[in-house]
Length: 265
Image (cartoon, rainbow, N blue to C red; front, side, top):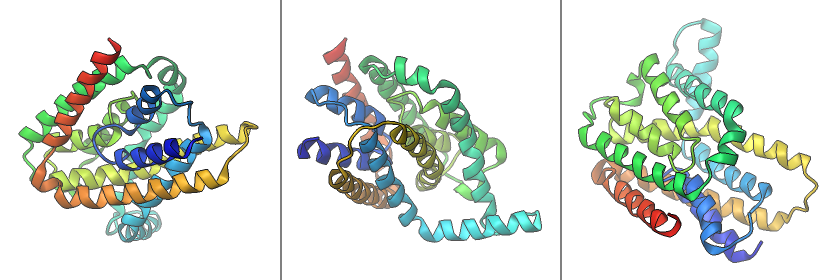
């Protein structure tokens, strides 16, 4: 793979994985618009590892506490410290895991077209804007009920449709439930950890079954670049989202969707 393609794909994946603008849409569209060859499974695994490394390192203290308290809750059979949040992340992942197993082939074969991406980019962009505009923003992620977690989990499953944006739709669901912007973003980022592990694991299994040659130096470069971009994105997004709101991302989605309709309709 050319160095230019590696650079831009790893950078875009790292930045868009946690922004509400759909990383999958950009990874599908960028090679399409530039007439690049498919980046391959090995590259997809590498950039997922980079994104996972970034979010785990950013939330390392919270994850350590959540893991310890979750383990204690299993032994004591009651809520302990941050164990409820840990359970929320695990249970919120079930819908997307089941949907991915049942519909993976259909989504991959039938829903990866530019027009589908244009429709979801615009439609869910408008929904994000509406949710942000009407949000009460009087709750944090620790106040989520089990029904709230189910609602966000089901929303995350819808994000398997390319162009929807996993982070975008989970933040939208959080805002609809009254979460503060930063709280909706934090819970979305924590939810991404098991999802990236699942999707990256599936791609790794596929990679193991193939006999294609692997350019390890290129993959290490892609992993590091994706991790740096993703960590930077998380840091600045959480720092400024309460001030700037979702409007810039809504406008971006509408413009991107309009460009896609113009190019491919």
